[in-house]
Image (cartoon, rainbow, N blue to C red; front, side, top):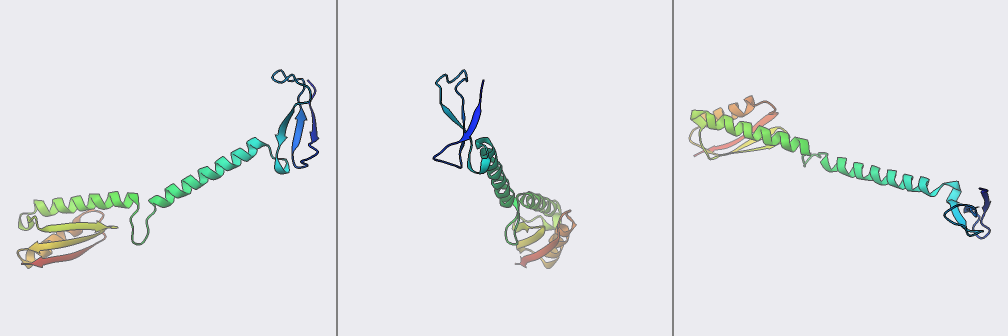
Length: 146
């Protein structure tokens, strides 16, 4: 099998080979393009494009899960949901604060209590119970005594 490589006359940036003796193509003088612009093979160019696309997908995926000052990331949302559940359970298990009119919201570890309670002692107790939960950074106690 004799393979000779030469530049294509009309396109100096494309290299070609004469593969007259290959079993798949028995016609003499057929040309198969080996290299593209600046000597890179087509496969090398495709690999570079695929790598670039993979990097773009990863960057997009990670930035979508990242948190900002006003928006939680995925992991923080799960953590805050667990904190909210633990605070609600702590408030409901305490007999003096067993009131269904207390709303609990958590954002980046900061718990906000809102709603209505019967006494100032119940409001203080609810805030204290929230502070005891693991993962709570601070508590904003906005409970109103009716």
